[in-house]
Amino acid sequence: MTTRKAILISNPKTGRYASRRLPPIEHIYSQLSSEGLELELVATGGPGDATRIAADAGRKGVCDVIAD
Image (cartoon, rainbow, N blue to C red; front, side):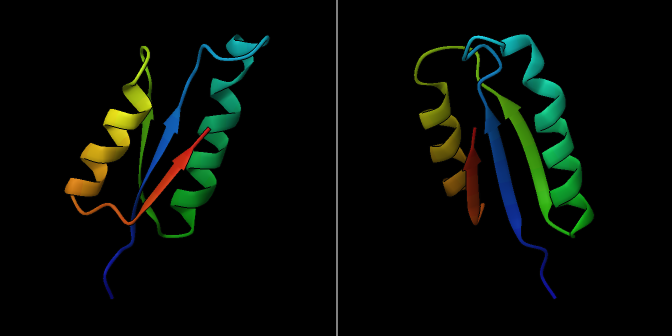
């Protein structure tokens, strides 16, 4: 059975409480990984990053893009 590949894209500087976002994202990453999903966690660094990251992931054969 082939492992399903996914990417989890997070913007750590969005919202009022940005400093609190990363630990919950890491928890989601851990939960999904424990279910057998081959998952990569990527944080954006600036405008347009999420779009670029998602497009690159698609070209690399990633099945699912999860954005927060």
